[in-house]
Image (cartoon, rainbow, N blue to C red):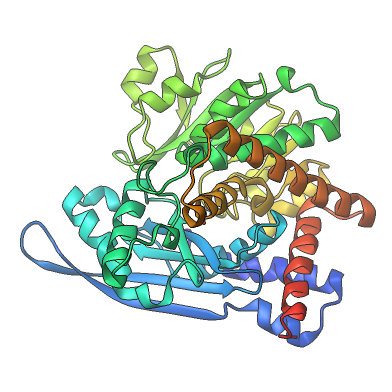
Length: 429
Ligand code: GLU
């Protein structure tokens, strides 16, 4: 998923160790939380359209389930590794804890570029993933969801396969399903809009007027799209640039317009893998620059919403002096070295597992609706999401101010504290 020198699991452990020191955690408690409680790696043989059989590799990591069933997405990405999945699973534990939803942390992955598969091959790969791991999944065990490279339709196939294997309709085994097949209204925009709700809270804290603020977004997948749309529609601000990875050219570009991009228009010319159509953008007056250009724009807010390890010590140095806030829509976008630069420059940080907790929060709402077999209005979902994100942000800010710590450390302190309490209450430690 990322460059060889950057190991997300080492970063996740390093961040955890720092918070564990601050919380003075006992050694045995650290030992439980530093590593996932369970890990699976399995083969997925898939019949390809040409009749051949190809073997894919799948992973599922369950980091901790003290607060409830393991929860987290499944990534389809050519560079997926066990360490990436471990890091993401651990971050899910903290994410659910900081959002205060009764779930643990897990993550899955398949080493594949889904853009190379036909629809039929994708469906067989999704069903094969479930065939390989279904005994260790379930609404009260581990509940997957979409992530990079996976879609609601794929979740629908996976839910169907699990239901067939278990002989009953089990919508609660997976979230992020299509609406009409057990999915929740509002799940599609939940992560991006959740990012915006935390930015709104941070702006209040920093006394910034949202309508006068500008932003640049990295990544135009599900999170980047709805963060860009929400920044203008929900806050009244302007997004001056968005970057995206072009899967045809295998390179990234930045799309900008001085008066602000139109997120809905850009979304309408983006394919299902997050590649914006350059010709159509150019015809509509967009300026196209190199993939890193988003980072050095003179804006108030930077929203990295792509992959891990994007803000490094070197790239963080290129951030404009105008930037007041970094809101991490992606999981793990900032390396510890870049963190030190942001801290030293006094840039306010909304850390990843707080900032992007909106997706899993609505996933939780989806499973509540599945259990009750009663579905909520769109407006009710977004209102509850807003409440949850606001409360989570305020909890972390309070911790940061009370202990005079950086927002990432504060988020870790809140999250780890919740998880350790649950382990104590269950008699594990
Ligand atoms: N993949 C998303 C995340 O990283 C959502 C997880 C979920 O809904 O379970 O937060």
